[in-house]
Image (cartoon, rainbow, N blue to C red; front, side, top):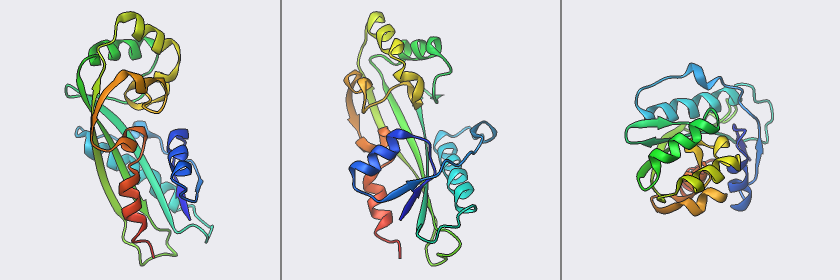
Length: 191
């Protein structure tokens, strides 16, 4: 069974919709202590820290692997995690409207110490996202919904934010929080 080291309800829903048996244990990692100027490296470091934090505490022998994930949006070279507040979310949307961003998700799959035959997996999956050219009123209404405050990049593809995305180039589920095709490949190699 998979143990998801994440508090993200979107990641849990993806696993449920894909019928992947799993449990959830939040890592408790302080993300503010992990830094790297390269966003693809940063999300991998964060994903690995989350997976390792949970794997080292694991006593449940029914768990075969631990998955850690973390996402950021990069727009015009600037990294956007979760917006700090509504004002920051609105400012970001005014910058992003009509433009392309890159959503990077770090994935780390580790086995507990009891499963030494599994090699740890670590990578970043990137999906390009074209945002709609929203009016100021549309941005204000979306930000006031509260949804952008909960997500890396300030939008939820699986929620209202999905109607503000014109096009994706890459993995759809990656933008929601984890690449299901990647996870399927990785899980097929778990002993």
